[in-house]
Amino acid sequence: MFFVYSGITSGLLLGSGIGNVKVSLIKTTLENGVKAGSLLLGGVALSDFLLISIVNAGSSWLAIPQNWEKNIFLGTGILFIVLGSLLLLKLFIETQNTESVQASGKFKLPFVKGFLINTLNPYNYLTWMGFMVFLNKINAGKTDKLIFFFFALLGMLIIDGLILINIRRAN
Image 1 (tube, rainbow, N blue to C red):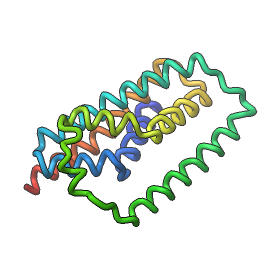
Image 2 (cartoon, rainbow, N blue to C red):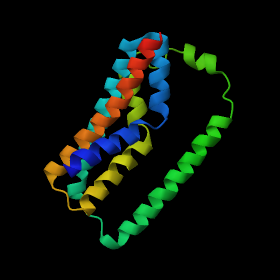
Image 3 (cartoon, rainbow, N blue to C red):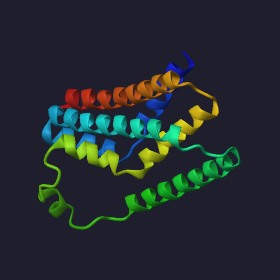
């Protein structure tokens, strides 16, 4: 039960954060309806599933020496702080030509848009790898890892689904 609870809690916490996916989900749903938002969410879910599969497959091939774990955790923490700072900086800088970007017709298919936004975000790789390092550290078995990742993904989808439902009710 530990892996169910920790997986769903991790997914709910990850899902409650604001990022590219949430902004795109809200924007797509408001502009094109709930069906388009659901398709975008499906692309994100497929992307996360593939990333989790890659991390699971790679963890058995890549053994990290224990004396490196502290440095990896520290480096990852610093990287997240730097990426977060850059994101905050980006939020305060006004972008130019936003209308020309929107009118260019880029990412017409919401599913592809969701998949690419999520897959091309390096934060996602680091997040899933961080969870894998944690699970390896506590000597979780293969089944325990699958349970954890399943419920983490479910928790994220619950939050995103609630966003879609609330947008539909607001319209």
